[in-house]
Image 1 (cartoon, rainbow, N blue to C red):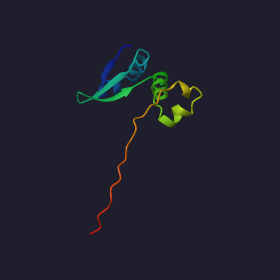
Image 2 (cartoon, rainbow, N blue to C red; image 1 turned 90 degrees about the vertical axis):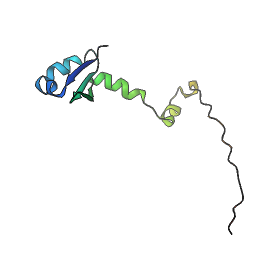
Image 3 (spheres, rainbow, N blue to C red; image 1 turned 60 degrees about the vertical axis):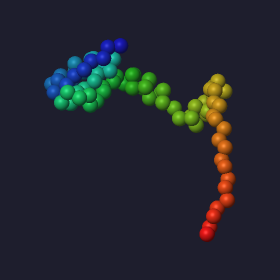
Image 4 (tube, one colour; image 1 turned 30 degrees about the horizontal axis):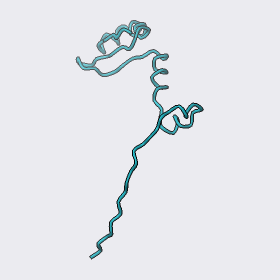
Length: 84
């Protein structure tokens, strides 16, 4: 994977170059020398989006039995209230 870095000005002047560069990896876009945006191919975006699951989605999957989930036990103490 190759990471390409372009300034905002270069991006505006040559969008096709940036689009072609996404075929080799992400394109970092800077604004006044600071990283501001990332341009990805749609395929890379889909891979990234699929990796993000919440616990409910993961447990609802057919292979959820393969996921180890052993949360720590929580002990909640009870104390009397003083209403004076």
